[in-house]
Length: 124
Image (cartoon, rainbow, N blue to C red; front, side, top):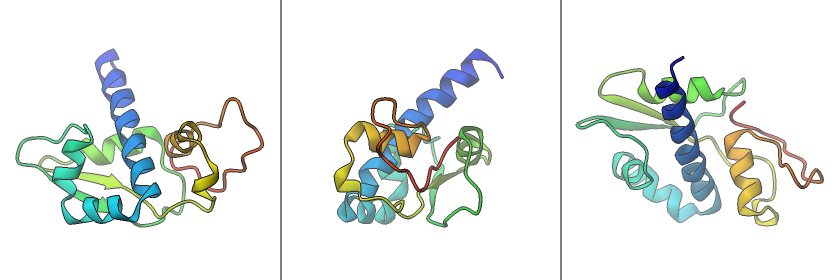
Protein backbone atom coordinates (compact mmCIF):
# COMPACT_ATOMS: atom_id res chain seq x y z
CA UNK A 1 0.00 0.00 0.00
CA UNK A 2 1.43 3.40 -0.98
CA UNK A 3 1.89 6.29 1.44
CA UNK A 4 -0.96 8.15 -0.29
CA UNK A 5 -3.28 5.18 0.22
CA UNK A 6 -2.26 4.88 3.86
CA UNK A 7 -2.82 8.61 4.44
CA UNK A 8 -6.20 8.45 2.67
CA UNK A 9 -7.19 5.46 4.82
CA UNK A 10 -6.08 7.14 8.04
CA UNK A 11 -7.95 10.37 7.21
CA UNK A 12 -11.02 8.41 6.19
CA UNK A 13 -11.05 6.29 9.36
CA UNK A 14 -10.72 9.42 11.51
CA UNK A 15 -13.71 11.12 9.83
CA UNK A 16 -15.66 7.84 9.79
CA UNK A 17 -15.05 7.32 13.52
CA UNK A 18 -16.18 10.86 14.28
CA UNK A 19 -19.37 10.35 12.23
CA UNK A 20 -20.21 7.03 13.91
CA UNK A 21 -19.59 8.52 17.36
CA UNK A 22 -21.98 11.42 16.68
CA UNK A 23 -24.66 9.10 15.28
CA UNK A 24 -24.36 6.70 18.22
CA UNK A 25 -24.84 9.56 20.67
CA UNK A 26 -27.97 11.03 19.11
CA UNK A 27 -31.11 9.53 17.59
CA UNK A 28 -31.67 12.88 15.90
CA UNK A 29 -28.29 12.62 14.16
CA UNK A 30 -29.08 9.06 13.11
CA UNK A 31 -32.34 10.23 11.55
CA UNK A 32 -30.49 13.02 9.72
CA UNK A 33 -27.99 10.48 8.39
CA UNK A 34 -30.71 8.10 7.23
CA UNK A 35 -32.72 10.92 5.62
CA UNK A 36 -29.79 12.16 3.50
CA UNK A 37 -26.78 9.83 3.67
CA UNK A 38 -24.86 11.56 0.88
CA UNK A 39 -25.33 15.05 2.30
CA UNK A 40 -24.60 13.91 5.85
CA UNK A 41 -21.40 12.09 4.84
CA UNK A 42 -20.24 15.09 2.84
CA UNK A 43 -20.91 17.47 5.74
CA UNK A 44 -19.01 15.09 8.06
CA UNK A 45 -15.94 15.41 5.85
CA UNK A 46 -15.99 12.00 4.19
CA UNK A 47 -14.67 12.00 0.61
CA UNK A 48 -17.85 11.60 -1.45
CA UNK A 49 -17.14 11.33 -5.17
CA UNK A 50 -19.11 13.70 -7.42
CA UNK A 51 -22.41 12.08 -8.37
CA UNK A 52 -21.88 9.14 -6.02
CA UNK A 53 -24.57 7.79 -3.72
CA UNK A 54 -23.92 6.91 -0.08
CA UNK A 55 -25.63 3.75 1.13
CA UNK A 56 -25.91 3.26 4.90
CA UNK A 57 -25.39 -0.32 6.07
CA UNK A 58 -27.00 -0.77 9.53
CA UNK A 59 -26.45 -4.54 9.69
CA UNK A 60 -24.60 -5.98 12.65
CA UNK A 61 -21.47 -7.65 11.26
CA UNK A 62 -20.85 -11.32 12.01
CA UNK A 63 -17.14 -10.57 12.26
CA UNK A 64 -15.35 -7.35 13.07
CA UNK A 65 -14.62 -4.96 10.23
CA UNK A 66 -11.01 -4.07 9.64
CA UNK A 67 -9.90 -0.58 8.69
CA UNK A 68 -9.08 -1.90 5.22
CA UNK A 69 -12.61 -3.33 4.83
CA UNK A 70 -14.23 -0.06 5.91
CA UNK A 71 -12.13 1.91 3.41
CA UNK A 72 -12.58 -0.66 0.62
CA UNK A 73 -16.36 -0.75 1.05
CA UNK A 74 -16.43 3.04 0.92
CA UNK A 75 -14.24 3.41 -2.17
CA UNK A 76 -14.49 0.06 -3.93
CA UNK A 77 -17.47 0.64 -6.24
CA UNK A 78 -17.53 3.67 -8.56
CA UNK A 79 -20.61 5.80 -7.95
CA UNK A 80 -21.47 4.06 -4.68
CA UNK A 81 -20.09 4.42 -1.17
CA UNK A 82 -21.08 1.94 1.56
CA UNK A 83 -21.08 3.51 5.03
CA UNK A 84 -21.16 0.91 7.82
CA UNK A 85 -23.04 2.28 10.83
CA UNK A 86 -24.10 -0.71 12.95
CA UNK A 87 -26.38 -0.42 15.95
CA UNK A 88 -24.97 1.19 19.07
CA UNK A 89 -22.57 -1.15 20.90
CA UNK A 90 -23.63 -2.75 24.14
CA UNK A 91 -22.11 -0.14 26.44
CA UNK A 92 -23.64 2.86 28.18
CA UNK A 93 -22.47 5.62 25.88
CA UNK A 94 -23.35 8.29 28.42
CA UNK A 95 -20.64 6.96 30.73
CA UNK A 96 -17.92 7.23 28.08
CA UNK A 97 -15.87 10.29 27.21
CA UNK A 98 -15.57 11.56 23.64
CA UNK A 99 -12.08 10.03 23.44
CA UNK A 100 -13.35 6.63 24.60
CA UNK A 101 -16.23 6.73 22.11
CA UNK A 102 -13.85 7.57 19.28
CA UNK A 103 -11.64 4.69 20.41
CA UNK A 104 -14.57 2.28 20.19
CA UNK A 105 -15.64 3.56 16.78
CA UNK A 106 -12.05 3.46 15.57
CA UNK A 107 -11.27 0.07 17.07
CA UNK A 108 -8.51 1.21 19.42
CA UNK A 109 -8.41 0.22 23.08
CA UNK A 110 -8.60 3.18 25.45
CA UNK A 111 -5.04 4.13 26.41
CA UNK A 112 -5.63 5.75 29.77
CA UNK A 113 -8.62 3.95 31.26
CA UNK A 114 -8.61 0.17 31.24
CA UNK A 115 -11.72 0.05 33.44
CA UNK A 116 -13.93 0.42 30.37
CA UNK A 117 -15.27 -2.89 29.10
CA UNK A 118 -15.82 -2.71 25.37
CA UNK A 119 -18.31 -5.30 24.19
CA UNK A 120 -18.18 -4.48 20.47
CA UNK A 121 -15.32 -3.00 18.50
CA UNK A 122 -16.02 -2.11 14.90
CA UNK A 123 -12.61 -1.75 13.35
CA UNK A 124 -9.38 -3.59 14.03
